[in-house]
Each structure stands twice: as structure tokens, then as C-alpha cells.
Length: 417
Image 1 (spheres, rainbow, N blue to C red):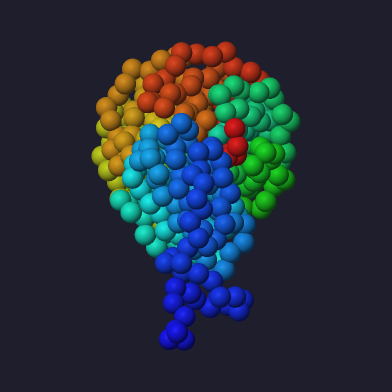
Image 2: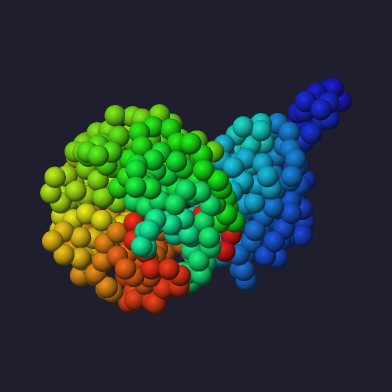
């Protein structure tokens, strides 16, 4: 006996733990749709008959090791999803989806610390990156009937609009809204008859909170979108004159001070997320209708003007759709109401006009829902809605529920269907 300890490491708790070379391979092949695994083990995962969700341990310490292997080379057909059970995975929170979709794959996981969590020491063949979860529900809020209102209407994961809920906070119109924090939303700014910088947070159950005194310049007719997966940006608008100010929103819903905007001052534009973690502002009134766009990086930096494609217009709406970060601008107004749409690729390229479906209108709102679809709703004197498929096809009118109104805003919320 040489006295040398091999294939073992000393953890910070004082326990001698096996390294990857000394894993205990569980002899029973996993064929179930769910399995909870333990550190120090290797598992054969057979997805011939069904996909499998693997729940990692709820607690772990540095050096903990788990290996999973595609037993029957079927992960490309029936995927494996990792549930990190409250711990981080490659620095991303447990709410992110971690899916392995390559046949013949094996994954060697090592736990690092509470910040980065589980890290694939090896993921043979190349694993997919963690995927940002998509919002499943949406909310329309505020607006103008014969007077400014604070009512809201929730939208379920199938795109069905619910009846009015009496809103919380200051009645107003011509505001903007966006998702933040992955599963929540924020309404901000607008006019009560005078421009304001109020905001109202929306929790992941769709409940609107009381007013928060806003930060930055009070204004109306601005736009907002999600960027960086879990943050938001308000941009442009009308203070009495056109501006190109922006205000970033962190993943806790806190609005930052004004940033001097880039690009042409304008109002009554629209904005949406695209490419899963970036945003785009488009169109609007710049002393005449425009089709300009401005891309926003995943760190919230607004780029200079891009000459737009399609019909110049204002009072339109926009939302993201699809699984790879596409978006759509729709409807609006120039000399008359329009039902045009313009699709946006996951690279931020705006396509030419598509003849819209449904009632031409302006001053409407739009949001993502159902993980990969979108909805346009309300607008001048109407309460109709139009669903958008995950390929960007706009459906015919659905008679809306709730009070007809214009000048409202909408955003996605909730990760649960």
C-alpha cells in the first residue's frame, strides 16, 4: 500500500468526496419522465419513449459532481431538461430553462459556488445554452375612454382577454409598458392631462401595485421594451416637445435617471424586444411620420438611426413572437388608420409591409403571451384584439372583452401558463 489517496477530494465540510473518476454509477437505467439525482453519482438516461426532466440536488457544495449520459442516443428526439432546484446553473437563475437536445450527448456537472452554481465541466458534443423563459400571460392597462382610466385586462396563455379589473394608481393614457425581472411588468409615464413620471409595477400574478414616483423627465407618447432578458427601457416621447430621452429599468423594477437618447427625437412610436435579449424602437412622429428604427443592445445602449422599411406612421404597437426572438410592428396611423404589419427578424432587420388583417386603427397596444405568440388589442374606439401566431401571422378580429379604449399600454408577465 502506497498510502496515496486517489480519485478523492476533501470538501470544505471536511468530508472526503469522490471525484469524477470515482463516481458511483447507478446501475438502473432511467426511463421515467422525471428523476431526482444525487451528487457523486453517474446516471444513464434513456429517452427512447419520452423526454426526461432531471432535478438536481437542492443543496450542493464546491466540487460536487454528477454525470448524465444519453443511454440510447435519443436526446435529439426526446430532450433532457435540467431543473437546478433553486440553485444557479452557469450563473443563471433556476427560472432559466436548461435543455440538452443532441443525441449521444453526455454531461459532466461540477458545482462551483452560489454565484455560478452548477457548471458543465464537459458536455460532450456541445450543449445548448440556458434558454430565457418566455412570458405566458399579458396585461393591458390604463388608457382613455371619455376620460383617462386605470382599468386593466389580463390575457391568459391562450390569448383570451378577461373582463375589466378596476386599476390601481393614477388614471392616465399615452403611457408605455414592458416586462422586467423575467415574469413581471411595469407601466410608466403618460398623461393625466399633464405629463407624469409615475410608474406601477405588476407582479407575476398580474396584480398592479400603487404608484411609485417616477424618476426622470415626465412625458407621454413614449415606448418601452424588455432588453437583456430581465430589464426594460423607456424611450423617446413628448414633454410638450419631442425628445429622445431613455430610462433604464433594472431587474427589480427600479427606473434609472435620464440618459440622453441617440437618434431622432420623436413620439407615438412603438418598441419591442427581439433576438431574445435586445430591443428595437421604431416608427413614430418626428415632425412628420417616420419609419426610422433604433436598435438597443443587450446592455441597454441605443444605436443611431436606421432608415426604416415600410410605411411611415405613428400610434402603432409592437411585440415579440416566435422561439428565436422575432418581433412585429402593427397597425398605426398617418393620414388614415392602417392595418399594416412589419415583421422583425431575430437580427433586428425590419421587413417590408404586409397587408394587415383586422380593423385598421391607431393608439392600440401589443404584448407577447403563450411563450411564443403575441396579441394586438384595443385602439381608437374599439375593444377588438388580433392574435399573432408563432410564425408572425395576424389572425382576424376577435371581439374584445372590456371597455373600448385607446392610449393604453401592454406587457407580458408570468412564467406559468
